[in-house]
Image (tube, rainbow, N blue to C red):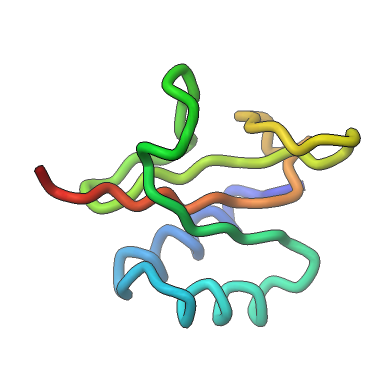
Length: 89
């Protein structure tokens, strides 16, 4: 389960930092049991809808309860968070 409080904390940290391996490491240390991924937003499926959108990144949730991980907008079913970086044109 990914709570709104957790999402708010991740968004705050991502807005105050550079999206990089160090941020992902800090998030993993602060939130054990939650899987964090960092990628480029254009690596995400075209029809995926972020749960939060900011100028520098979109935030997606991941459900890994089945054999394959899938994007979801259901925080109760989510086990991970993807920070998808948006590069300026």
